[in-house]
Length: 174
Image 1 (cartoon, one colour):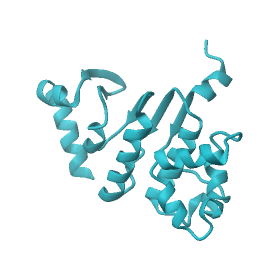
Image 2 (tube, rainbow, N blue to C red; image 1 turned 180 degrees about the vertical axis):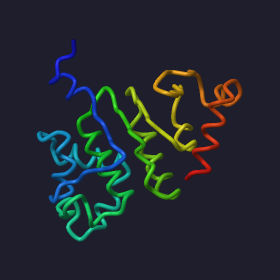
Image 3 (spheres, helix red, strand yellow; image 1 turned 30 degrees about the vertical axis):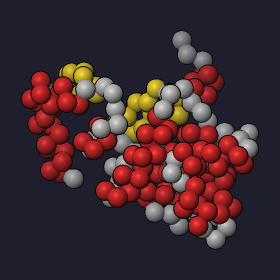
């Protein structure tokens, strides 16, 4: 049995579709930890590769982003969501296809942020892009709701033909 309050403090999720409030960037990041200091918010933003673009905005961390973060690009929204997760300092971070809706340049920036954020914590990444697989130590290949294979990306490419087929289909579709 898991205590729901413990689960909420130990696990953070960054979803594919990022939801931001019509509030300041500071407030949107602080949703992850309402008691976070400005220093903690800025550190989380730096780790999430968001600090620089936030500082370039007219009001910096006090910039109001509008409903659903409409004034930000998709990549900027993802990095704010990542900072929100980081400011909680969770033991477990779950990333649900967090780079699926961004272009290759923004994806590279987000992946650099993920490398920093994943350090010293358990991270579960749900991914459909092969480029994301370069970030992980171990891949759990799930097909039809069951675990079909476990190993490194390279191992699965060599040893599991169906894994290679699925990746090729996904790459063709995107």
